Length: 95
Image 1 (cartoon, rainbow, N blue to C red):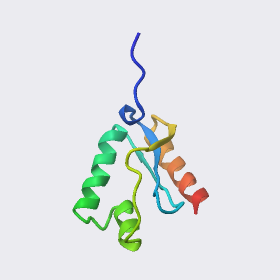
Image 2 (image 1 turned 90 degrees about the vertical axis):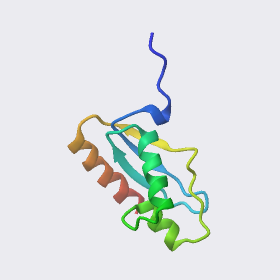
Image 3 (image 1 turned 90 degrees about the horizontal axis):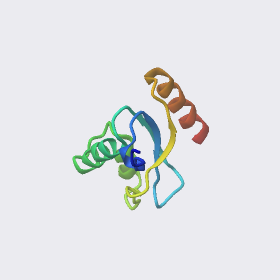
Image 4 (image 1 turned 30 degrees about the horizontal axis):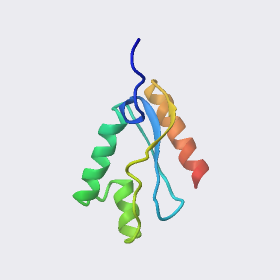
C-alpha cells in the first residue's frame, strides 16, 4: 500500500496561500507539486518579481506576513483547462 501523499506533494491542484495579516488569500493552480510551486512563489518574493501575485500583495501591504507553512488544497483537477476555469471561478468568488 502506498503511503498517503502530503498536501505539498500533490500535483494538479488548485490551492490557496493565506496572508496571516488579512483575509486576502492567494489562489492559484499548478500541474507541479504544491511544494515546488510554493518555492517558486517564495523565490519571486525574494527577488521582487512584480508579476507574482503574492509579491504584489506584500508590496502593497508592507507589514503583511504570508502563511507559507499552511497552504491549502482547494481541489484536485488533473485536466489543465478545467483547472484554469476553476481557478478563475474561485478567484472571482473571493473578490
